[in-house]
Amino acid sequence: MTLGKITIAARILTGVVWSLGLVTAGASLMSYRPGPDLPILPPVALILAGLSAVVAGQFIFMVIVADRVFPGANAKLVAACEWVVAAGLALLMATTACFAAYYLLK
Image (cartoon, rainbow, N blue to C red):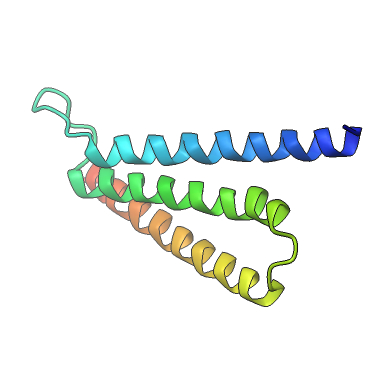
C-alpha cells in the first residue's frame, strides 16, 4: 500500500468518525428532555439543534467520504446535492440560534 492510499484511507476514516459523532450527538440532542430542575433550552430548540447536527454529519460525510469513494459521480448532481444540504444546514442553524436567543433573552 502506498502512502497516497494510506492518506486517503485516513481521510475517509476521519470523515466517517466525524460524521458519525455529529449524527450521534444530534440524535441524542433530539431525544434529550431536560427535567424541571435543569431547563437548558425549550424542546423545540433542542430538536432543531439535534437536527442541525445530523444534517452537518450528513454534509461532512458527503463532502469528505462520498466524494473520495465515488469520484466518478456526476459532478453537477453532487454539487447540487451538497448545495441543498448546505442551505438546509444554514437555515436550521439560523433557526436554532433564533430560538435559543429568544429563550435565553426573555
